[in-house]
Amino acid sequence: MPPTPRQGRRAWLLSGSQAVLLALLLLVDPATGSDTTTASEIKDRRDLVSAIKRLEKKLGFRRTKNFTKESKKVAAAYRCYYTGKLELPESYEGLDLRQGTKAGCPVDAQKYDVFFYPLDADASGRTPVTASLAHESVERFLVVVPHEDFHANQELRKLPATLGEAASTLIGFLTASEVARQEFGEPSEVYRNLLREPELFSRKAEIVNRYHVRLSQLYAAARAGRVSEQDTLAQKQQIFEEIQQACKAISPAPKSFNPCPAANNNAGLAFDATYTKYYPLMYGLYRVEGRALKPTLDALQRALRAPTEPEALRNLQDLIKSPPASATELLATPPAGGPGDSLSCCSPSRPP
Image (tube, rainbow, N blue to C red):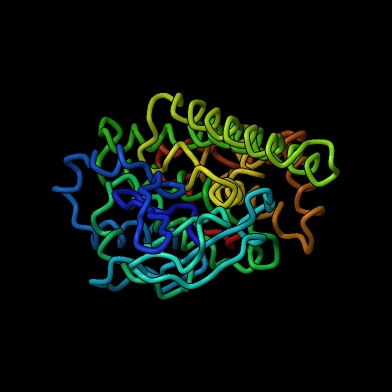
C-alpha cells in the first residue's frame, strides 16, 4: 500500500447522500496538488517512470510491473476504513475495512469514525498509472512510484505494516529526489522541494505519534471508567483541533504529502500512524548514514532482514547507535554522496 495517497486527489467521507470533504490522504495536500511545477510540462510521466525504474534497478529494488501501463480509471480501488468513536488502532491493519464505490462508503459515519480512501496506486506489482496519479504534481508522482515498488521486497512482507510503510516512505522520498536531480538538475524547484521532504515528514511523524499516544491514553481511561463518555468525546474534539493546528503549522509546506492526517478522526489518525510510528527511527538512520540514499538503503536492508518486529527494531536502534562503517570500510569505499551527488553512490545491491 502507498504511503502516499495522493496529491491533487481528495478524500470524501460519505454518510447516505451527504459528502464531507476531507483533507487529502496521507501524502496528499490539496495545496500541493495544484502546485505543479513547470517540470510537468517538460517531462512526460512515462519518461519519469522509466527514469525511476532505471535507478531502482541500480539500487537493487525487486523488479515489478507497477506503473508500466496507464489506466483511465480515477482510482485503483475504493476503500472504507472505519473504527469506533472511542477506538484508536495502532495502524491501518487494526481498522475495519469495507469495499466502497466512487459514490462513497456504505458505513454509518454517525456511528463510526470513517475514512474514505480512493486509492490511486497500490503495491500489487501490476498497478497502473491511474488517471488521478497521472495528474498529481511531479513531486508527488516521483515519490509514489518508488514507494510502491519498494514494497515488493520480501523482507517487508514478513514485517508489520508500521515498519514496511515507514521504510517505503523514506526510500520513496530519497529515490524521488535522486531522480529529480538527474532529470531536472540540482537548481530545479522539483529537486529542492523533494530534498526537504524527509525532514518535513519527520515533523509530521512527531505530531501524529504524540497525539496518537495522548488519545490512546484518553480512551483507555474512558474504558476504565475514569472519564465519562461525554467528557471523553469533548476532549477528543479538542485534541483533534490541536492536531490540525499543529500539522498546518509545518513550514515550508510539503509538496508530496499532506501534513495533516488523512481524516481528522480516529480512522484517519490510525491510518497515518502506520507510516509515522517508526519513521523517526528510519529518519535517525538516514541521518547517521550521512543523509545519503545508497548507505541508508543498505542499512535498512540489514536492519529489516529480521523475522520479527522486535528484532528489526533492535537492529535499527543498534545501527543508529553504531558508526556507519569501520575505518577499514571507509578507506576501501569511496565517500557516499547524498541524493544530490553522483549516482556512483548507487551501485546495484540486493533489495532490503
